[in-house]
Length: 264
Ligand SMILES: Nc1ncnc2c1ncn2[C@@H]1O[C@H](COP(=O)(O)OP(=O)(O)OP(=O)(O)O)[C@@H](O)[C@H]1O
Image (cartoon, rainbow, N blue to C red; front, side, top):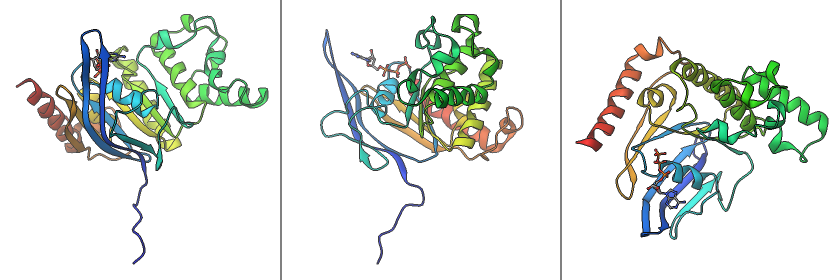
């Protein structure tokens, strides 16, 4: 019998990821036997109380932190041994992530400088800025932009590398509700047009229900995945009508119950 091939290949496969930090007060076990796979093109959200290890897990997926002994993490079937090509990170703190003395276009082009010719660099930077609606502001400096615009610059900087995977750590956490909703929709459009895999960290359960294909709740000390479910919604989402669908309400309830159970 021929070997069975999965319908959708895994982007990430994590097995028994455990992390212990050395701290002044001795070893701190943060993650314990975290195992999951994430399919290519999937939008997976990590949710959980502050300090449970969501950023730690994202840093492992980014290849910035080695998984502990006995753990394995692979990307597209290859063991992850460091930062991989095709993986981009977006942080919550856009102001600290952008170089304030460089123009918007020179911030966006940073990761490509010296790697592609000048003409290609210019074209790709403009295309990325166009995707986030900021081409007209390319000669401005970050400090001349609103918070939402600065976050879009950070997203453009990730997109310019044409990532297959976007790792996003509370990217909209510091934004007002309207800007947040706009950027959520832009992210869904970008993801639909690029087919990128997204691993997204948030504290916002509405955001998790609206954006995700799957939600994983991380909790405990040390933390593990204590709840996980699919979000049953059409790929095309809308801030008003999607939030009236039974699939959205049910996802919201389930996340609420999973988080609520943590405080019981
Ligand atoms: N480099 C480090 N050295 C020592 N301890 C660390 C380090 N990085 C994180 N920690 C600790 O590990 C735990 C998990 O931190 P992490 O930032 O991964 O949590 P989080 O779930 O992302 O938190 P939040 O939701 O507040 O951003 C915390 O107790 C934190 O203090």
